[in-house]
Image (cartoon, rainbow, N blue to C red; front, side, top):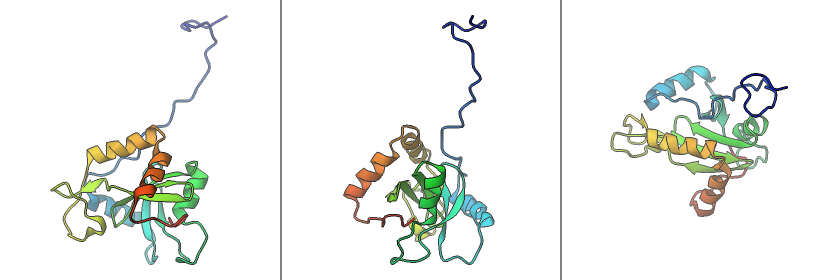
Length: 168
């Protein structure tokens, strides 16, 4: 017999509430994020820290063995063991977003823009960068709808700069 309040006649079961579907919340300014990430990483590495926008974990991006190395980079290994091979990374201090699917990766527009709405990858102009809610929403849409893989393939097909497989 169905428990009270069950309209379809099936017994109620305890289903855990889903984890938040969106990406991690980011501070409004890139300077604030940069400071927070620097507190969480060890100094002295030649690799750049990268923030996983899915889990909030910070790892170093890139292969430590250089171009000759065939081993997967830390971001790739993290994605393989924690996020089913899908990754959305914000590389610090460049403010560059990297999308990953398996060992394939591509660059995606930065979610931090200057006051004129322009990217400043690698902070060449030195202007303060602010979180773009529109770009962050577009990135979250890719994640929630499961379109990261398709976006990686699409961007790699048309990119002028290709990231080596497993580099990150």
